[in-house]
Every structure is written in C-alpha cells, then in structure tokens.
Amino acid sequence: MTFQFLQTVLAFVFALGILIIFHELGHFWVARLCGVKVLRFSVGMGKPLWIKKFGNSETEWTLSAIPLGGYVKFYDSREVDGSQATPQDLAGDFSRKSVWQRIAIVAAGPVFNFILAIVLFAALFLHGTPDPVAKLRIASESSIAYVAGLRQGDLVQSINGEQIQSWSDMRWKLLQLGLDKQEVRIQVTRKNLDRSSSLDQLEFKLPLSQLDSADFESDFLQKLGMEFFRPPAILNDVVVGGPASKAGLKPGDQVIQINDQAVLDSQAFRDIVNASPNKPLTMLVLGSGQEFEVVVTPEAVEENGKLIGRIQVAPRGQLEMTVLSYSASEAVYRGAVRTWDTSVLTLKMIGKMLTGEVSWRNITGPITIADYAGQTARVGWISYLQFIALISISLGVMNLLPIPVLDGGHLLYYSLEVLTGKAIPEKYVEMAQRGGLTVLLCLMLVAFFNDIVRQMS
Image (cartoon, rainbow, N blue to C red):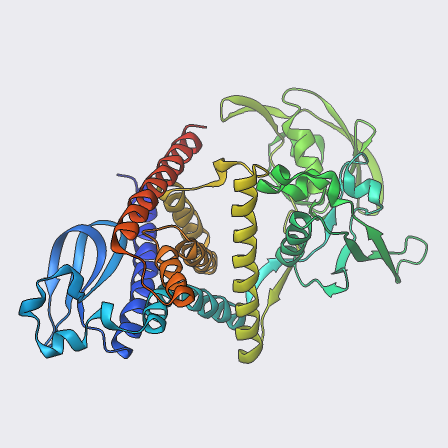
C-alpha cells in the first residue's frame, strides 16, 4: 500500500465522516427539539460494528459496516407493537408529530449540509485564500477570446458590471452566464503600448453562445482561448554543463524568438523546447541589455512514454497571485452567496442532464470523490476544505430531490399531506419507496460505471 493511496483513503474517510455526521446531526437535533424519541444515530449503513449508550440516554450511537451513508432512527409506533408502548414512547412518536414538525426534522439534514458549506467558505474567506489574478494569456489568434478583442496581458476588472477579484471569481461568473446563455460584457485594463505608464480601460462582448452545454463540462476557458497569464521567458536558472549553458545562456537572459517565431511567454518557451528533442533551435536572446543569437539543441528525454526536449533551464513561471480576505461579516455573507450560487448551478446541471444537454458521464461515485479528496488534500488544507464544502452542497441538493427514499421524497409526501389534509396511504408510500430505491440503484450503477471509465482512461 503506497503512502499516496493511504492518504487518499484517509482524506476520503475523514471528509465522508464529517459530511455524514453533520447531515444526521441536523435530523437528530431538530427531532430532539420537537420531542421525538431517537433510538439510534448511525454513521454508516448495514451491520453495526460498535454501539454505545451514554448515561441515561435512550439513543444508541453506532458505527456501521458500510461507510457510504448514515441514518437516525426515530421511535415510530407504525413499526412496533403499539400495545407495549409507554406514555413516554407515544409522546416521542415521530408519526404523531405535526406535519410541519416532520417537515422540519426531515429538511434539517440537507439544511445542515448547506450550513456546513457556509461555515467552511466563511472560514476560508476570513483566513484568506490565495488565487491567481484574472490576467489573461491569449495564445491563439483564431480563438474566440482573441476574435472578441481580448489580448495577452489583459487584466479582467468586471463582468457585466460585477467586480472580478481573481481567476476563480472570473471562471465562476463566466460559467454561470454561459449555462444561462446570457450576453457577457467583459471589462479589462490593458497596458498602453504608446505610453508604458498608462492603462486603457476597455470593454468587449465575449460570445459564450459559441460554446454548447457540453463544453462547460470540461475546461471551457481553454475552449475560449483564455489561460493563466505567464511571465516572459526569462531564465531563473541555467544548469552548468547542460545544453543551454554550453550554448552561452545565463540566468537573467530573456528568450524573445525561437527559429524566427516570437516567444509569447515562459509557457510557450517550454512548449517549443519540449516539442523539439534533438532538433537545433536558433534563439534570439536579450541579455545584459543586448540582443544576440544562440543555437541550442535540446536533449531527448523520455517522459510518459514519449521523447521530449530538455535544455536544463528553469524559466520564470510563477503565476501572479492575490489573496482574497474579508471581515467576519463579509466572509459569512460571501460564504452564503457561494453556497447559494453553487446549489443553483448544481440544480441547473441536473436539469440539463435530464434534458440531454449535459452528459450523464458527469455523475460521479465514491471512487472519483475519493480521488478528488486525495488530490485536494495533497495540494493543501485550503483546497481540501473547499472540496468538503462543495461535496456538502452536492449532498444537500441531492437529498432534497423529490426521489422516494431520499429526504426530498419524504418532504414530497408531507407537502401533499399539507395540501390534502390527509397522510399518504402506506401502500402508496411503499410502492413509491420501491420505485425510488430502483432509481437510486440505477444512479449508483451509472456513478460506479463512470468512476471505472475515468480510472481506466
């Protein structure tokens, strides 16, 4: 068992445990407020592995064998022999509570998932989250972004009048507008080439309508031709004895052209060198205030089964970063807004799956979620907490869907009870439960299939 695999398992189990506990605590806490007798609080499904009662508590706290879920079991006179019930049992009977109390108890689980997401986002906003600035790399003149008028080095200031503070902020806003097929007005600042100390304020229309819904399932910014801005191809380090050193290159030199082709930035420099193993490259270089030419032949190095070129240099490649940090009140507000926007976007994506606009391949199961848990944990705790917040939102939204077996299915029954004044007959509830279970199993099969396909690709 490798350390990376172990880290992935632990990150997944911890995240899942937090999400399950918070969800079930919502049901438990509101049930106790409503006077319902709680028989069991279980983290996990299936056979109990550990059961504990604390003091005079009537609740069994349980760890069960299958860690993909949990449940809170209430006293329900419909499920036991009522002749043996005590007055205390009947007072705590879930089925005897008012329909509004039952609605509150069932809704509390998903609501607690949303509260967890708000708390995590608010904590991150309060602490400060580093993010690349919304500065653009526009490499292709045939790209949608270039044709719209955007250029290399443009700094995005606002979209449709809303201020943009970072790359993630820009991506999120464009994703929302793109899925809604809305017009996009993007405002940027651009260095004035005639007056180097001044900036021009410009506005362009970005035609997101040229993308279809499927494009938003992957890196749609790349499809627009928009990437992270990279610094010029200035060499930070040159390995003594390597191809670049032998050709006369030194730290601080800037590569301007290669084989008479302009080098856009450090990323373009890497791409050209990587694509040229054992091929001589004529480089126009600016060093010590003077331009000169050198010929460098990249060494052929095997990487991931193919040959790439290496000249043993380290060009500057750091992204320009900003730190998003807010006061406590602003952090909570932004956490709530992010949670709301993410929930709405999740519902829109589900709707587009049902209409066929978005592929069902986007449904993910525990294998993919575990993989993401491990990846984000390795990146750092900020990314990991963001991941937990997003999964918590997804869990909340999914549980509110009107599918029998899920919380949303029970809320549907109780809503009909409010409208008709009568409880839904048990035989119809049982039929709906079987149908809902079938739907849920089908979704799980699709999720597992998608997970396996992703792992094999």
